[in-house]
Length: 209
Image: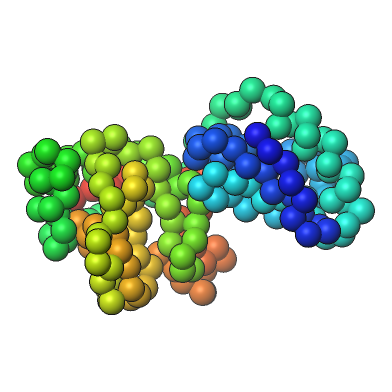
């Protein structure tokens, strides 16, 4: 694990994989609430694919965290707490569903069963407001991105790429493999928490009636 300064008010922690990111993210969020000084100086914790950024309000608070974060990076991985679970109904009729099945050596029915039988973890957000990268799905659903991205992917499209699943929160370009669609609102400015899916949560897909 590598700790690097990120400007004067933040630190970037680099780890080996998404599971370590989630464990570190959970530990830091808990320390921010219950750990007292200097952990209370943490303003935000931002997980990504293989990094966690810790931001503070001032350079002095960031400096006070250097040694504690260095010690934390030497600790063994911590157990991940299970966050809230969100159920997402999906109509599995995406234009890439057949290609995904062929690439994975599965039938279309097997792809749907694999996608719905595992609780996915919200690893981190990015790309667009409400877009969440979901990990820990069935390992058989490992497909790459499309060679040619689409100019427009409809909002609510459910997709797979590079070991992740995701839902497009709004119409946008995209290069993921499209397997279905949902009417679940991924982003709503009027909600207290605009993003439906946030790091630490779980997602269970089910076949829409």
